Amino acid sequence: MNALIRRPLLSLCLLLPFLTVACLKVAPPPSPPPSPDVIARVTSAKKIFLSNGGEDAQFVHDIPGGPNLAYDELYASLKQWDHFQLVTSPAQADLIFEIRGTERSAIVESASPDGRHSDVTYFPAFLNLSILDPSTQSSLYVITIWAGRDTTIPKGKIAFTKSIGTLTDRIKAVVSVPAQTPQP
Picture 1 (cartoon, rainbow, N blue to C red):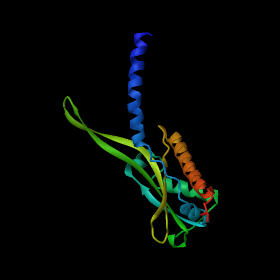
Picture 2 (cartoon, rainbow, N blue to C red):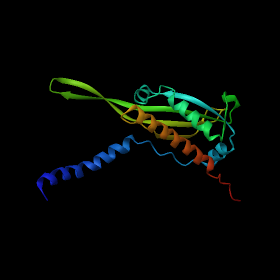
Picture 3 (tube, rainbow, N blue to C red):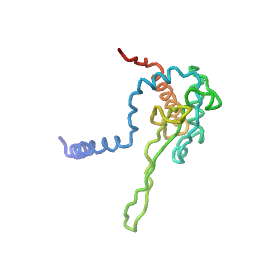
Picture 4 (spheres, helix red, strand yellow):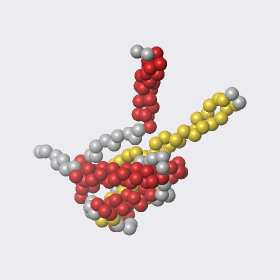
């Protein structure tokens, strides 16, 4: 094999395990399957209050559509699905769904020939949906997914809308899972 091809290929093979580990560190942790109690609560719920948990400043920076985009898009998606009645007060709700957009960043300091300088590293954005008990405000279940993005505004809007669709599909999956009944 030619040395011009072999050396870059070898470098890529040596670098690949490190890139894989780096990607795993920023991936959202997989949500454990919901417990039978959570499935029963979500399946029996008729009225939902959708709460806007807000977004981090970094999240809003790269997602076109403003600070309420995740809330607005999820509200429209749940309304279109028409499985739950969306109510205007937590007191009226069987469950509270709280949507929040998060993105972490880290300041990395490095030395340059002319002195030290800092760079900001942004990690991927996530959508977190917490299912809360309206009487105690305690979290029953959390769904975390990637928030879709792209390099242009039109493609970014499409990618974000797809991630809201994925989030709605994850909610549908919880509703469609049959609750297990204890065997005597």
